[in-house]
Image 1 (cartoon, rainbow, N blue to C red):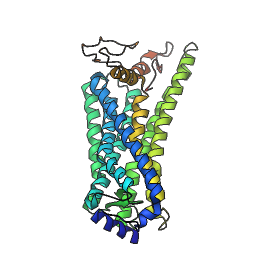
Image 2: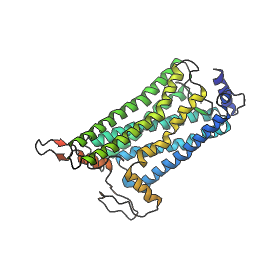
Image 3: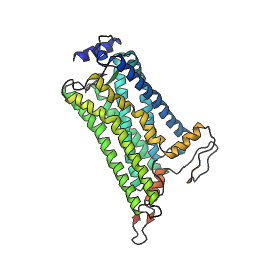
Image 4: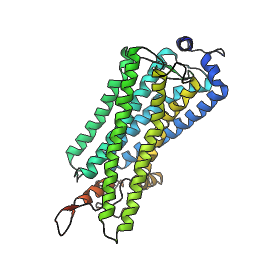
Length: 374
């Protein structure tokens, strides 16, 4: 409690001292290391998400219903890098919080708000891919598919707002966390209201999205494995390679989610429900930094590893006036080099999933003719 009171005094004045318990707990070397990590997150996260948004702007034909959610993820990660990370970076450089109590509350709210938007969007992305591959959604030109995607985007922001406004209204609160150079929900509060909020946040904003991702990507993997078993011997090796790529994609996405967010959620639960002092200020900083790295990993895992997107990125960097060629290109490039309706990998996959029939039993047979999301 004394530490929290000392934090509160420092926040209200915007000043710190060498006698600050949080500063002593971390040390100058620790603050410097945190500043270096935050600097990399700030630069790489901003550049990565900026490139993603630029490519989608340059090639509007890439904006499929699935990619609408990718745009939403990049936008929320970009806002974290612009509106939140610079404050914690500056605080780590100086070894104390610099923008007062109002700045601390703003930082805590904005990071939680944009972070949950990204988390929810990741789970909705898995649901959209599941629906695309296994739900017999054959055309990206169907306006209803775009309406559903934009409704999902709006739902992610509204859902996040529902769970991040309560601390501003009295259900828990935002304040200094760890060594006092970052702010978030007050995990260390022991009141019934604070604990109930933290428990709900863990279940509804971390655990449920994770379970949805496991379900959707698990079903996709099962479908791809079924493809590998049913194709002819001639195409067997090709199907196995695609199965391996899909497996790599799924493992990367789920691992990235777990690595970035699960340590933070576990530490928050320990700080709230465990013994007092079980999580030291220095130890609580590491999960927080891991959570912020999601702004760097998301563009790589979800977008930059996509071959179609990578081709567009390379052509944009080279300032080419022509759209990148593909084997399955059905339309000519426009004068600006923009695809009107490029065939996406999700669309190619689902188009093939239900088009082939067994000649003897006249039953749908899964046949994968294009790689999926790699």
